[in-house]
Length: 110
Image (cartoon, rainbow, N blue to C red; front, side):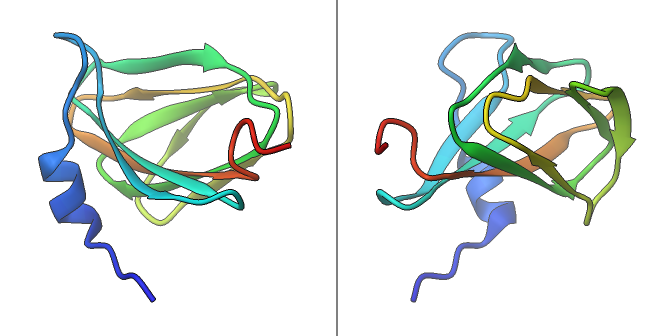
């Protein structure tokens, strides 16, 4: 069993480019991948698709998620489910926004 402290993982997450959201790979197996995203106010993850099911779990902060049905505000504790190939993205509001993404099966394992 592995237990991950989302707050600590989010604090240690890094960004590959200035101005882009920080991310951390939390868990990675053939069955599932878990990535934690930390977005500063106004930052976003552009809309994209995945061949896997994607679940977004809001850990902290305020923001919005984008999907085939448009944009919706979310808050801590919300879980958003996207089916395979459904467009999805996220954007922070006026405070830091932390989301865990569970991607199953792991991309490329099919």
